[in-house]
Amino acid sequence: MKIIFLLFAVTFSSCLAGTPLRRTDQPFIDAAPYVFMPAQDLSGSDSLLPLSQVALKNKGKAMFMSLLIPGLGQRYAEADGKAAVFFGIEIGLWLTYCGFTAHGDWRENDYKNLAAAHANVNLEGKNHTYFIDVGNFDDIYEHNEYRLRQRDWANYYQDVDFWYWNWSSRAYRDKFDELRIASDTADNRAKFVLGAIVANHIISAIDAVWSVYQHDKKQLSNIDWDVRFGDGHFHPTFNLHVIAHF
Image (cartoon, rainbow, N blue to C red; front, side):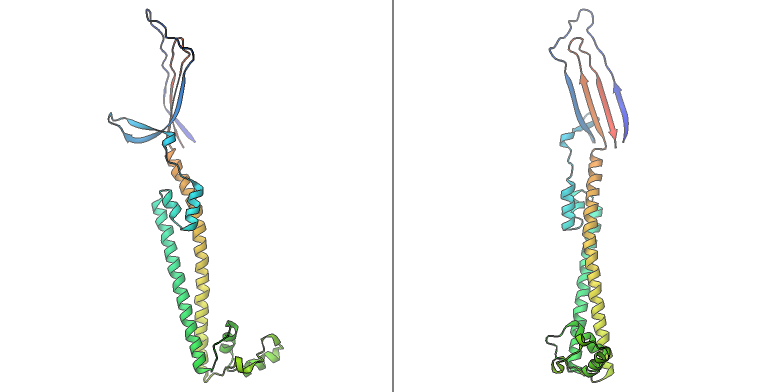
């Protein structure tokens, strides 16, 4: 903290000859903090605002606001530029997430319809692992033979009628696998974007606390102290003005 003493004035006055001394029962002390404001009054001099009237921000409130909606805490801290950035990132990420999710759903519908039309697949009750197998083998019999050779009893399809598939051509099977991979890729990217959304909320909340700190630091960057006291007999006065820059 750098403290600059702009004015240190000491004025000592006593009673002149023929002037009665002023007596009081108690010495007086008057010390009050002020924040130096750049506004000009009618006389052209700088005005002082009491410290109690300075609008300081709440860090916890700003953090919660940005956790809820990125950029909202920055807006509260009057950091409008950063508020626009975080909110813009949030909108962009959600649009990207929706785009990947929609693309994945479209491709999923495409490969399932292709399997139903060209591999005689019954789509009801089938999981994602099943469709991976449909793309890797020409028919269920080839798949089951492979599982037997590997002694992989857990993935052997015993109910052939329920799990049945048989591709009419290798070209359709390759197209099916291409669509399935595209769907899975889009879904994985959507999950990645969802993680980025969470990160944006956390980063925005941390930055909101910092923005409040910067706001309050700016508000308190100039403090003026006015101190006066006397002993009540000679009625001396001592004036101290300090402007502190943080």
